[in-house]
Length: 481
Ligand code: GLN
Image (cartoon, rainbow, N blue to C red; front, top):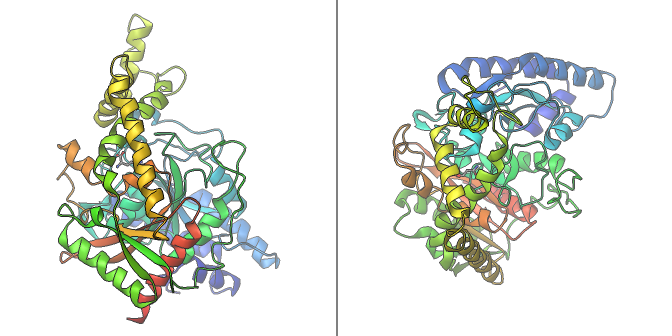
């Protein structure tokens, strides 16, 4: 049996038709993950034993003729920021290098109920802070398309796990772009959901007014299937409204006839790599051929988004990370010191990496007396302008399309000494994050160097079904070219 190019849907059919068993799938993908991990540093922890156990359970159910869901027995990979009961969960930080959670995140619990087969926990930037997976105590993840390049971040391991075909779907988190950007760099589909659509309970918080969790998949249909099983209200995350979860496959094949697509001029300006804007515009033309109407729009506050995010995010991050003091949470320091302050100082000094320390310093600074009004409060006001921009545009357009990232993947080491350059790579993902909007990355071509390019489809809140439909329509155009 050749397992190459399987999707969730095809694998599910193969399992029901008894072409292969869940255990065979789990073995195949675990072996591949083990082998490729040496080259690409995708996984922090491999969980072959648990994967096999879960696979055998589903095999038992299938052989008894029980109905199993579409995700039952399907190999997946999980960002090492999600609590997984009894399995090391490091957040790629020295602070949590020995942390074994006593409970599962809600998303994990829901997927376990579906018969989840987890191949392993994937690499990330420490506490999800970064855009390249280089800020991990385990070293950078390499891009499976070309190992000299970064896989993106912070969910670089999850994107790479899929691009290297070591699983059939994976989970990541997206605060300022951490699903969309690595999906774009690795050439896979990645969905940032509406703020509140999926429960974040049991996932380590980064910046609570932005944090979302979502799926990576090989295509939009698979992406819809994973979202379906995770979305919805959860009493453990009060930001999840009791809003009906639609059937995400219901209208996915309906096409884009009559749909208005807004093209924001700020997403195609001189800061965007030529090859990237060309690829995205080619994709837009295909959608136009399929019946969509193109409207030119403007999101003038886009230019402030990076500045806003890099004030509000560190403010929230510094508050969230305050609990890691070596006493309430986190590793003990090697030297305890004489006073309690020494203890905290040592625990946090040893436990956090440089990028985390930088963000804690910025965060506490912008929140401190005297600077709060000048930075934090002002940034929150500008955030409202960004939200308003989108509201205005959605009066004229059903969705917005632009590039996901200003340029294809950069080389490992290229931006590591220049935080500002690294932050600017988030310029096109941050605006939707500021407004809590859903946004989908769909691969739409390759650069001359062979690096993937992704387009970003952004919609009003709770329009994941619409975004998936647009993405699917583009995938169908591609298949007929
Ligand atoms: N690259 C962004 C940052 O470093 C996004 C991170 C994220 O979405 N988790 O903050």
